[in-house]
Image (cartoon, rainbow, N blue to C red; front, top):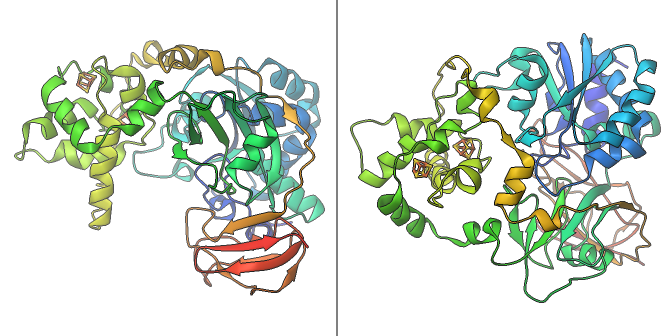
Length: 442
Ligand code: SF4
Ligand code: SF4
């Protein structure tokens, strides 16, 4: 198989980054790639998907990685796994000698090790220039589940119709489970035995970057976790504060200690983002210097500044998000700025994940969420037409059509960035509109 054939297969298989961002995977493939890096770092605390896939599907994932290296003509594939994932490391060590181009790299247990710019630096010591993409330094980063999906498509012609998800927190049996794309959050909570309390808030995704969700919300190809958390824990209280309150707090309480900048993972790699300067500028209405505002483009919203670094409980990330989204909406583009040298204190300033978990008040929820094979009686799925970064699909089915699992039900516009959408349930199409397709079991 050559690269163009693989791109076509991944497009037709509906494969997007399963690690959270949802970039169509075919668009990442390039003959400029020298190194393919497997991201087995889990993006955020409490998520237990990738480490378990690396055990249960070690041969499939390593085979998929070797296939990517061969197809792209890369020099090597790096299997990057966090140090604490001992069983996953053992599984890889027991098989990796069978794959000529693959090597293992042990990552430190830091946050955000799963950020691809941080991952590339940790594994290769190359710095992706701020605002640019990994291929500029010859790297392609792929998530474990994404590689499993590539393996399934290329070797078995299986399209993406399922998603692996961790359900954790205030549920009776924390689990990690493979479910059809398009089921409801409520279905996942049932699989985990239900809530242990009536006083909770749910997050779809991780505690740092996930979004508050509710029972009828829908699982997509990028859903990685459902966390059920107490309303009083920092990840929830921070999300509930308004921009107005965040700004007022910045005006009255930012001491300009610059701890947010000192620990910012991107700033430590020489990026121009300096959250303390941004806070000073917005809190004091500074207009003579636009740099702190323009540099907001280089914040990747990891959340470390507000969830960990700031001793005053302020929200640089949320204010930066607000500002850069406003700039983007007005069509402003990020400036072309070279990185400064990597900070020589970077090693000492990495944030250990266990400390972050303690700071977030989540230590009691950091429990095993074992991979479970659950009996599911899913009667209906709702497939969102937007499943990835890029163009949404248009439905290619109509109400009353009979569809089988894996059958094409939606396509992106010709030539647009996007992937094909497939039925995740065998049944009848019962609703179609601009946002979703509903399929009900007969
Ligand atoms: S860490 Fe908090 S108080 Fe210190 S400069 Fe940053 S926002 Fe201000
Ligand atoms: S969220 Fe904060 S710590 Fe993370 S990249 Fe942005 S400024 Fe840096």
